[in-house]
Length: 157
Ligand code: HEC
Ligand code: HEC
Ligand code: HEC
Ligand code: HEC
Image 1 (cartoon, helix red, strand yellow):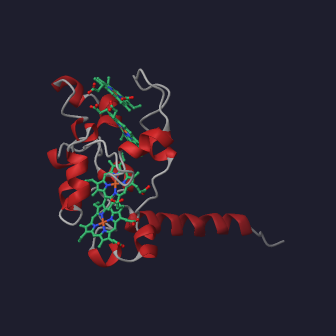
Image 2 (tube, rainbow, N blue to C red):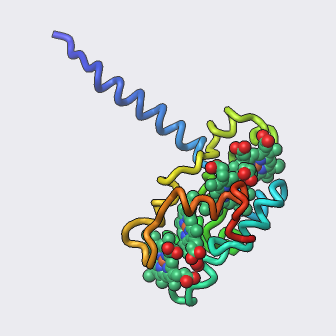
């Protein structure tokens, strides 16, 4: 009797697609300065915000602590000073693939190449139950402090 393994074959095929897909499509962080070359207003707003100082404010040993780095900087395993702090890409998604101008101008393409919608889940990766805070995280209220003044009350102003 011939051995039939339809699921096995499907799993191998899926593995190939996923493997190839992630190898070619994994974006890298490019840093706030490069985003800011085109988005000056958002850059200035962010630069004046606590997120920009999130790593710099920690003591030198804590700046090197992988646990602290996991929430206080955008690329925890990178020592590049241009990636320090909670940058654009912590909220909008890693940008190496969507940053080229022709991609940025195409609503569908930029989404496909990693520009993410900012939701409560975006923040909760860092602002979770274990975060040292005297105030409970409230997405509706706090997002108005980080949306670059879209609500007229940007945190940097
Ligand atoms: C070469 C210039 C350029 C660079 C670099 C660039 N952008 Fe953009 N970005 C644009 C343009 C142009 C648009 C489209 C604006 C529009 O559609 O009105 C855009 C759109 C966006 C939007 C969506 C706005 C919306 O209406 O939804 C976000 C968010 C954004 N960029 C964030 C970033 C971030 C974060 C970076 C860095 C990782 C970055 N951009 C780098 C030019 C750039
Ligand atoms: C799970 C994510 C997370 C981890 C891990 C984390 N932090 Fe934080 N930390 C935050 C967030 C989010 C805030 C802002 C809290 C707020 O304002 O409600 C914060 C705030 C702080 C503040 C106050 C900031 C200020 O300027 O007053 C200090 C200090 C701090 N963290 C130090 C540390 C140190 C040291 C470590 C490592 C031992 C660490 N954090 C690990 C998420 C984290
Ligand atoms: C803490 C999260 C956070 C960070 C950090 C952040 N943004 Fe945003 N950004 C938002 C939110 C929220 C909005 C409102 C629209 C939305 O929900 O996507 C927004 C909107 C935008 C827009 C759309 C146009 C506008 O001004 O409303 C652009 C462009 C943008 N951000 C670029 C940047 C750049 C460039 C940086 C870094 C210099 C940055 N953002 C850092 C959360 C963030
Ligand atoms: C990569 C982790 C990370 C992400 C993602 C993140 N934050 Fe933060 N946030 C922090 C840290 C760390 C601080 C403390 C910075 C400091 O004070 O040194 C902070 C501080 C803040 C503050 C300032 C609190 C104060 O004391 O004034 C606000 C407001 C805030 N975050 C809102 C948001 C919102 C809204 C989102 C999602 C759209 C978000 N954050 C996403 C890590 C993060």
